[in-house]
Amino acid sequence: MSAPGPLPQHIAIVMDGNGRWAQNQGKPRSAGHQAGSDALKRTVEAAGKRGISTLTVYAFSSENWHRPSVEVKHLLELFLNALNRDVAELDKNNVALRFIGNRSAFNPAIRDGMRRAEAKTRDNNGLYLNVAVNYGGHAEITEAVRQVAKEVTQGVLRPEQITEALLEDKLYTQGLPAPDLLIRTGGEQRLSNFLLWQLAYTELYFTDTLWPDFNGEHLDLALADFAGRQRRFGSLPQVENA
Ligand code: FPP
Image 1 (spheres, rainbow, N blue to C red):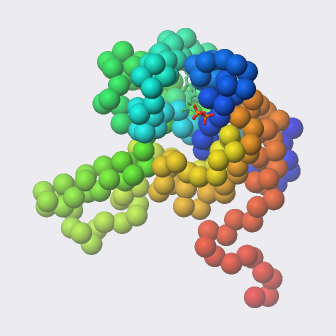
Image 2 (image 1 turned 90 degrees about the horizontal axis):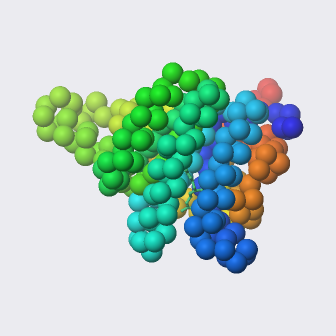
Image 3 (image 1 turned 180 degrees about the vertical axis):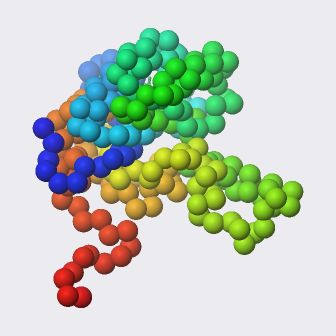
């Protein structure tokens, strides 16, 4: 059951706490990521039922490559398995998948799996699920600036034609609305290089719940909190006879 009041259309999620969840249970970190993958499936279903149209989740940051190689290997296997196993079900549930981030670092099997998953689900419109992989906000903005600079050098674009909309169009999230709400699980209160441009006016919600424990009830708590926020986008609250 969701709270009365405005519903966020687009929710971004930093799915943090898999490692601690596993540690608490005396299990290897890989078990935490597996449970995190199950939590993601639950959350996609719960979000769809509540009428949320877009979810953007942080699955693998550009800094995650620095983790021990056995953990990186496990995460990549998890992605590949999900791409092979779960896409048909997502497709059946009318979910459109899109991957955002720099794919060039992934092996051909994963890149091909991403491409096929996007092609298969392209026309779905029940829920848009964007999965950030090898994603970094600084890298995304840098790449956008590089593209714009190239166009200026080529004489296709004049510097005075560079607008916020033009830059937005060069980001991985091209065409997506900005997130209304960011949820970060796992107790830390930071953005960790996620969607730095896109989160400018997003409401932030932090919870101590570890990601593998996250479920529809936790989502409802976040939605109720959001419903009580007053969004001003840098303006003033609506006052009568002002
Ligand atoms: C952060 O927890 C989580 C990650 C780096 C990986 C997130 C990946 C998943 C939830 C699996 C998603 C699966 C698919 C198929 C997209 P952490 O390891 O940093 O936890 P800790 O802070 O407790 O150590």
